[in-house]
Structures are given as structure tokens and as C-alpha cells.
Length: 348
Image 1 (cartoon, rainbow, N blue to C red):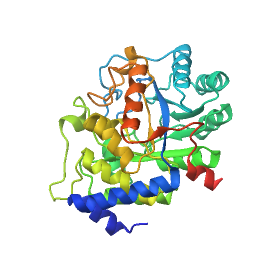
Image 2 (cartoon, helix red, strand yellow; image 1 turned 45 degrees about the horizontal axis):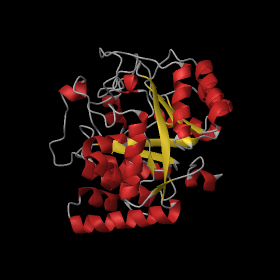
Image 3 (cartoon, one colour; image 1 turned 90 degrees about the horizontal axis):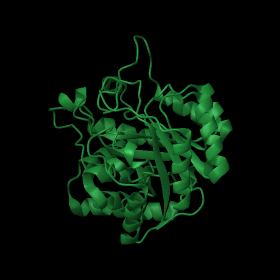
């Protein structure tokens, strides 16, 4: 384990020889705890409608974009495509879309379970305990909701409430997920305008504190048609965390050292900034998950949370082929089975 001051020192480190030691340590811990297999999760972006006003996201409620919702049949068909590729998990992701009722999502979960037997991860935003309970009982296995930053003031700047007096408490949602028996996933953004190295170190310590089963970290990439895309307020005291692939690699490695048994993806944001080398680099520095996109081509380019998102013009076959090529290039291989978190299994 690492103390906070050590984490900060590593985040600020620019010595390539020293960083190589960090990455080697993280990779060895990854190999010892979760092995060389890589869990492939078929990502389906089921809707780009969103009620939220997040200050960096391209599908925020006020943005004028072409909206879509996938039908139940399209969602199940995409899940079957992931099953054909041999994936053990499908991920249903959307903006915070209140058109999808709890019953509707529950029906989709049940249908995917019947037709594929796959594990199901949901990433549908801040939901009530009642909704989360219904989806768990319908067959959902995992839920992913990033807390994004553990600094409450910084969180308020990037996530304005829907209405006056409303409180967004993602840590409360994470607590509910744990109580309901989900595999719990969260994570942080790297390089938010105003984010200090101390803030980011606190985020990494928070991963350990709340004992996450899945941890997603990636560089902050604001959409240009958003408040933070147009007018970012960066720190000028030398403590601003940069939003780049190198910093993401450091955070992946530090996260693996702090949370040895967690599932840690090499994220789409890293691939967007670093291409195939970014994706491979995330795996080489502690990652053990990739989420190939199964969303139909006609929709995926509309799920533009930030511009030029990696794979946004590819079909499912191309996304799959690219991932397999990456794994082959670094001597890793796809997992079989559902790909449960070792952390979740050891806790149970």
C-alpha cells in the first residue's frame, strides 16, 4: 500500500526510469492477483437522452444533438452479438434517461439473461434504492457509477443539480449498491479543471476505502459545446492535474497497487487520446478489462459525450477485431466465463 504523500510524488514524477519501476510493480501485482486474462465487456449505449446538465458532457440536457433510444429488440440483438464473440458480460449504458422505466429495464435484463446467460452491468446514472433493487432481482450483476471526484466543491462545479435544493450523492448510491449485493464499480476523472494532485490522491485513497470491485479511471475530455469545453478554469498554482494519457497510466498503476483484486479497465478515453497504444498501455500498467463497443453504428456516433470518441465509426466486428489484435500484441488473452471481480469474490 502507499501513503498519500507517496501517491502525490508518483503523480508528479516525470522520471521515465522511475516510472518504469512503478509500472513494473503494478503489472506484477496485476499478474499475481488477477492473472493474464482480460475480461471483455460488450458495451451497448442504449440511449443518449439525458436529464442532467453536467458541465463537460456532450449529451447534457441543454445540448442540441440528435437523440436516440434503442429498442428492446436492438438491445437484445447487440447483446447476442457480444455473446457470439465469446464475451461474458454486457454493459448497458445511457444518459440519465427517465423515459426508460424501472419495469422496462427489468424486462430487458430478464430477456438478455434468458437468451445469453451473460453477466449484466448497468451504468444508468443515479437511481433510487427501489429501482436498483428491482434490477438486481431481475438479474443485473454489476452497477457502474463514477464519483468522478471526491472533492465535493469540485463535484458541484461539474455536476449542477437538476433543480434548486437537489443533492447529488453518488457515494450514497454506491452504498446502496453494496447493500443490494451488486459488484460495485466507480472511478474518477483525471485532469478536471481545478483538480489538484492532492484531490486526485484522495480519489485513489477513496477507491481503497470503499473497497470497489471495478474501478474506471480516464483523462477528462470535455465536449467543446459545454461550459467546461468553452471556459475551463484551470489552476495556476502549479497544482493542476494534466488531462493526458501519461497521467492516466500513472493513475491506473497506482490504483492497481492500492486495489490489487479489483477489475480495472483500459478505458475508451485512454484509447481516444492514445489510440491502440493507449489501450495496450493501460493493460500493461495494471489494467485487466476492455469494453468493445457493440452499439449499432447508426447510434454510436450520436453517443458523443466527448468528440472523436475511439471506435465511434466502427461496427461491432471491427471493435472486436481491434481488441483481439491489441491483446495478441502484448501476450494477453480474453477471459472465459463471466469475469467476476476477484475482490467481489473474496469479500463474499
